[in-house]
Length: 464
Image (tube, rainbow, N blue to C red; front, side, top):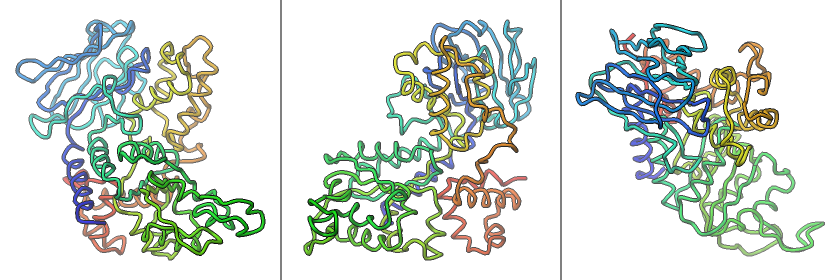
């Protein structure tokens, strides 16, 4: 990694760490307006938030900055519905004698002390509060995703992911730096790769290749092309994926599954900016940007000699990790709006969610990520003939007890297992990186590298 790229990586991590604990209120989802996406509002200095009905989604701060009045349209929310108060270092939600009640995690309450991760429901509008009350500290700017112009792949309400995406865009606009995208299967890596290409300004095509689906015997021919007569069945010249991406972006998905025999040839093509088609004797120059992606732990594969260290170094010009959907529940409404628009078309504007359906979507762990959400909503839209998506229209997996689910998130990939191990040890040792390194038999520098890669803030685990 070059000094410039490493600096961008460190800046993104430092910026994310500065906002990860800032108190923030998220409007996650509106059941009556699932296309409204979500919003976020800083709670620094806020002592009380009032929730009520309005003609549009608005947030008004008091002159002294201690109160926030949030208005959201909807026939189920009362004009004065609930109040969120900062009391003794915690947030307490109180129902204001509303007509349809206030719920926390699906249970009706009159007054409730919120825990991290709780979902507050007021009139079919779903909120989440993150961070403890604070009189001062890092202020996260207010954002209404319904008014934002960000492309689908870059949309997020999470401040730390927003900072990470901003750094990725800066790197993307340098059309030469290779990018490695890490994330579990179905988390949206190809969508993000397409946004990298769009941001790069490169005039050539975007060519996507699933390295895990390439037949071993044909890998080099498919990647680098061949000349007529190079082998039996080669009736004409073929460019191959690499030359087809000339002037544009080559997306190598599941790069960790590329056969070892083909890794050396790919390394040469990336180093020399040229390829030798199968059966040819002369190299052909290519100009392309490589974006690679994997759900596998490439560091572990390279340590075990399953993946070339020199190829990994060539691919990892800049590394960006895309969190699993379970780790970005605040973004569910943002992502759901785009998914519904894709699967329902013009009909999406008429769709609504019952409380039972919305609660199920927010409570489920989504082990197969955005891909699973897309499939679930595709079938739900088909079944909801009256444009009201109910729990009965959703897959049964969303209602199974956690222990009965076939694919729990912690088993989704070796990378996720490593992340879980690091976070578990940080919790056990109260954020002491040296103690974590000792427990794992690694150098502290390696733990710091993993924390940067997985966007883990050790301060979260300190202080008892």
